[in-house]
Image (cartoon, rainbow, N blue to C red; front, side, top):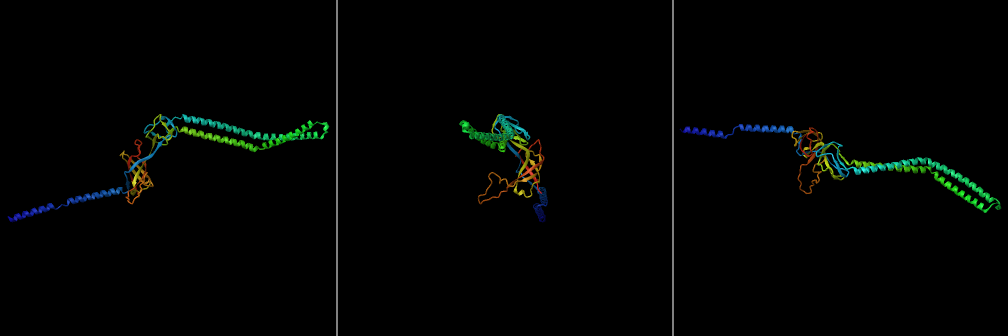
Amino acid sequence: MAETNSSSENEQNNDAETRKRPGKKPLIILGIVVVVMLVIAFIWWFLTRNEETTDDAFTDGNAVTIAPKAAGYVTELKVTDNQRVKQGDLLVVIDPRDNAAQRDQAKAQLGLAEAQWHQAQAQLDLSKVQYPAQRDEARANVLKAQADLANAEAAYRRQRGVDPRATTQQNIDSANAQLRSAQAGLASAKAQLEVADQIQLQIRQQETNVEARARQVDQAKAQLETAELNLSYTEVRAPFDGFVTKRNVQTGTLVQAGTALFSLVSADVWVTANFKESQLERMKPGNKVSVSVDAWPDMKLEGHVDSIQQGSGAKFSAFPAENATGNYVKIVQRVPVKIVIDKGLDANHPLPLGLSVEPKVTVE
């Protein structure tokens, strides 16, 4: 009986020890899980070791403010909100009547200047004939004055050489007066000949007048071009293909030069991605990029790295950080990277500026 009880107790102790001792099956399962996780981690690392990605990226593009260079009332508004336009399309027309009147006045001034220029040219052509003729006439007058002087001198000598009883004092005085008059006439003729001999100077004076009139014509043409240019400013046209946004004008609005009418956003869109400085080690222009768009998850874009900005975003901020104390905390900087989209854009889903995207750069 005692042996039976002892044997039963031994069996119970063995069963308890068997229940307390852990089996090998959980350890095997745990080992398999660890191996699988390591394999998955290795595969993930292997597939992504040459990829750099960031969620700090947005669509970007050219956006300009459309403003007129002429003042006046808006008479025609050719566009609506978010309308797509092409380069050269007419967007807004400003009342052109004031500028048209200035243009017509400039045309009249140009016509007057051209008429005066043609008149000066005709005067120059006439002077080339007139001045030599005046010189020949002056020479003839000198010869005539010399002949008159010789005749007066002969008459004076005759009056002085005859017997005083054969003439009168009146005749002597008359001969003397004729002699002096002939001498004065010869001096005057010689002076006129000196003036008439300056043909080149006189012609040059007319040529200078023609040049002055020509410059007036040029000035009038410039004024006309300015007036036509100011008239063209009354028509506001699209500088490039894009979309009208933030319209701030209606028909009848009085606008001033430089007033913002609306913005024009270019259809050419790229991505500006702010990568951490630690991600730029192997990144360079030309690297292939795949881009996913948060707004359209099914849209997959492909592109390449165009350029890397030569400076972090903080460096070009309005108030760059300047450490003026002895306390310094190093912060990982972000550098903007421009990514050009090569394919994947859909004309039915244009990308607005500022959309969140996630680029994935494949580095070498």
